[in-house]
Image (tube, rainbow, N blue to C red; front, side, top):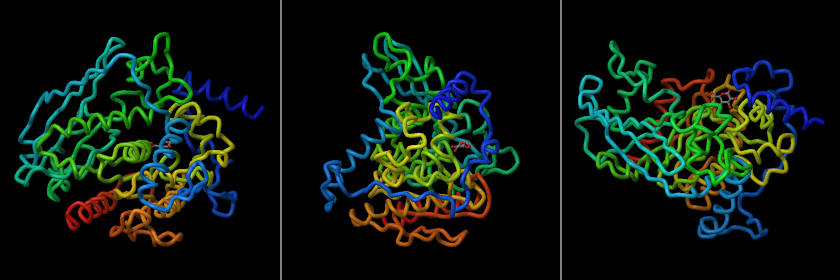
Length: 414
Ligand code: GCU
């Protein structure tokens, strides 16, 4: 019965995304207190599906990591099917502005076109390369809520060095980073429910008009887009392809982790308040849960994920395993005290458990299950973390720490 109600709600919200409710309306049954978190046992990271202990980097790389990625693909985010006919991909640098932000950087508007006999799609990727710095240069790629097509990326007319939306883009340039923006809605709608106009249709088999239960949802489509943007960067001689970090906030932070877990060309991942389906553990059921997520955003994950609503303990994975798939590449997790919907403690504990794999691979992970003091960032580690005072946003403090983390790994240790 409980399931019938859930599925009816999913269908209702799925058909009318405008009705999707705000988290506050769910507050009465949401767990926010540590004392109410149910007991849980995490699935083991270092034991294969066949029950064999994983004791070497080689076993991790060739056996356990592929098993985990396959579970995430088929049960959580959905896997990208093979298209029936090959997809033609074209890159076109549509515009180049060498005087962006008063000459601080060169902005390139790069159009990526996809086509096959099922249809066409395109994404507009913005690449900002600081002028006067040695090339090739390391870069941050951002899964972005800001639209690359509109005016979001215009430089602020008064405070040069910032975008209209307040981002300190000039700081990236000063500290020697290029910045690449990939808009989260280019290939798939924010709360896509039909999948008839999204990138998915280029992959449908004859007669198919909706993703199968194990096939990709919204977050997986975003991740696919970022990997295509990386394909472009591999052709751009301004960018050092061995030093590209992927980052994103909230929903975009979830997509960031799934991108980095799969695509090893990304040398670093930065997850800002990614929460549920991001860094936070499903089994804690704290803040947003699987049920809340699929009720409001039915297809961010694949349909198979619905089967675990209320049965999180049956999932053969939890999100510490997603972070572990990024190892040995550095990963940074950011939470904030008032962002309880994203379960900051769950994000930290997840990063702490993922550290077991970093250590196996000879890297430095988090060593304590207790959170560091608020406002005290862990930078000199392959698993970085900070909990900031405040709410659900990326603030100046956060940008500064992300850059510190990138400096530490991309520059100091070079
Ligand atoms: C909602 C959603 C979160 C998501 C957030 C965002 O609150 O429930 O999972 O992270 O939107 O993307 O800002």
